[in-house]
Length: 283
Image 1 (spheres, rainbow, N blue to C red):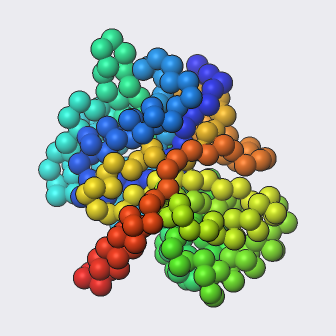
Image 2: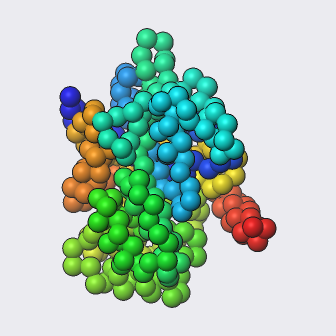
């Protein structure tokens, strides 16, 4: 069964080990409902979370195992889903997080994905990918690797990562792209009061579109962020292969989709950056 509709897509999601899984999905559902222009019945898919997991991380795999009742958390114990359940679809790259709401069912689509760190210390997301892709490739090679496995490649913004030498690498890539094979990514952690990175404007001039996402950081409080930032994607959902439906709709985009979300306050941005630098120093 197919349905032509609009789905809310958070295109940069991490389910960190410090997050309570049930709270993570509760927050995503609440955030999607806050920005939905036409929520519809509870049985409608509320939104899509596109996972972007780093080398050695496989939260999607743990959730997918829960469809058989054997899911484990990062410590090897049962995944605490509370009222949520994981349902398999007809494809490996997606599952449905579901929760009964009276006689209806809340549903959130979860799509697998990976995150690579390139030789230039930029990141490339591979949306719709269950294959572990290696870090350390050049930027162009990482994009090629994502395309080869059928994923949608995204180069996400990160504080300081588009400056200096790394900014020049990305600028060169944008200038050499005859037909865009990748997207840029924005995220809710960017400070709302700071100027928008100029590379977004250069990308738009080259026909490179932007896919926003929440990109929650590995701190307990950030479990409330999934579904907070993203895009409104026109899509015909195949109930058996919903992940591939979303990927196909992303590839078919020929203009910048409408986006939604709240960006970080300046104080919150500074706190997050300081906390991340402290965490890296303590590692």
